[in-house]
Length: 181
Picture 1 (cartoon, rainbow, N blue to C red):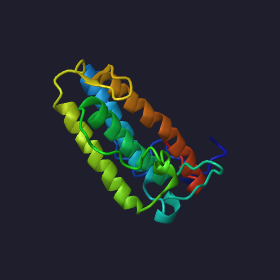
Picture 2: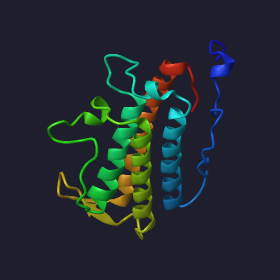
Picture 3: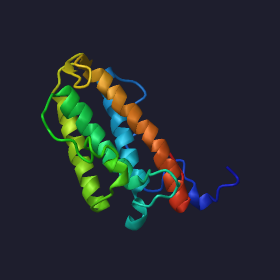
Picture 4: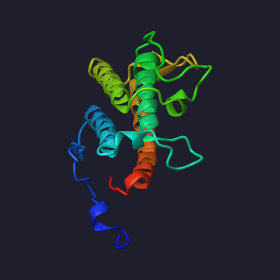
């Protein structure tokens, strides 16, 4: 770590107020805590970035941006919890069959609105999880028509966040040199 300027490195970012997941607990408690930790990490990795840089393509030719990641994960929350598990008939956000990449490619609107939409979807997802008695309960996956358990969805969404948080780390380091976990 000697090559990293001390002011840019913090093992836990300076404004880090994430709740550390427990080391032990039951399945519901652990999976919920880790997913929420990843959600909090997304906010942390966007914090302090000037608004005009949140939508900037800083790693060409990639279309990834912090703004796009927030929009994408908004759709992930809605798709897996509301549509796949709860079977709700709600439209996708930032996606259509005609323009499947719009979460990353068409960054209309400001970042604050995207973050508000993401927080709303996270709250709905949390409500679905809280109101489901067992992680064994299933929804019917739209694509395959097969049952899918809430347990599987919790794991899928957590891994989706983990993958994209790695992208967010790279974007953030490219934007302003900030690194952390």
